[in-house]
Amino acid sequence: MPKRPGSATVQVGLRLKENLRKRLAAEAERAGRSLNLEIVNRLERSLEFEMHLAAAQEHADSAKVLLSELREMQLQSKELYARLFDRLMEEDIKRGK
Image 1 (tube, one colour):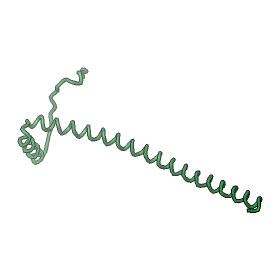
Image 2 (cartoon, rainbow, N blue to C red; image 1 turned 60 degrees about the vertical axis):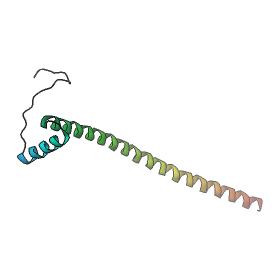
Image 3 (cartoon, rainbow, N blue to C red; image 1 turned 90 degrees about the vertical axis):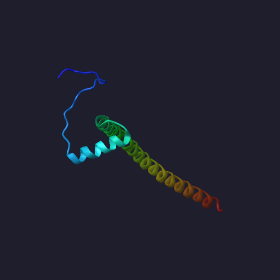
Image 4 (cartoon, rainbow, N blue to C red; image 1 turned 180 degrees about the vertical axis):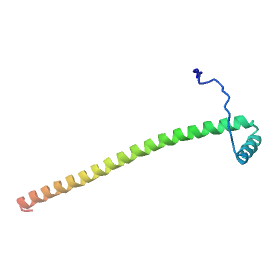
């Protein structure tokens, strides 16, 4: 198949259940669009939605990693504060306070 530019319009044969065709035709009429334009718009929106959903999932995954790292740092800070407190208490005991 020859390569076409991404902006080229191509004809595609499509088989639909009659109930789906009727729903799409009703939505196209309500929106003042042709059935073809309604189908194209819905396909484009669904692909964009999937792209945004994938990006959102990547951000969520990154946020989970960062949150995990933050929790680990918090635990380390608590441990450091506990050791510091223990040392200060030992020093106070040594000084007789």
